[in-house]
Image (cartoon, rainbow, N blue to C red; front, side, top):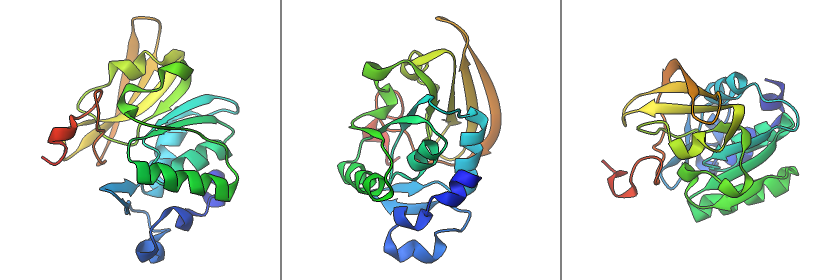
Amino acid sequence: MNAIKKIPREIFIPEEYLEHAYDDGALPIGYGQTISQPYTVAFMTEILDIKNDMKVLEIGTGSGYHACILCELGADVYSIERIPELYEMAKRNFEKLGYTVHQKLGDGSIGWEKYAPFDRIIVPASAPRIPSMLIRQLKNGGKMVIPIGDREIQTMHLVTRCDETQYMDRKLQTFKFVPLIGLGGWEESNSKN
């Protein structure tokens, strides 16, 4: 909660929604994407139990809000965004606030193999199934939080990698997220369905 209180959420939100910056609801940031509500950001971050110097992969940078929260907690953050305009917006926001985030423009649903394995992976976008490519990029004992379900409602999953071939999957509460687009998520051609 201290990290969330420290990050000025209004920086990450379009001007027309500034009066709602601190409402506990998701807000549009353009390009069909949203900034998650503060409760969801806190929930996902808390269940991952982020510790100082953990290497954390974030799938879907958006405007950069959640990556800044992770940095504030001491994580070494790697974040992937597929929309060029949001990638640039997040880059400006990181520079403005003085956070160092390793950024990549591309398909986050397949992760970032070059820098794997990761201690934690956070996916603030819904997938139809747990992407196996992301599990393989977790360290043994590493954790991933991801909403799984259909396009209307999803259940948050906490996935813990046990060893090279096995993982534990704990189902938590329901949420509604924008879809995870890419090879490990929903196909882009079906993203409007």
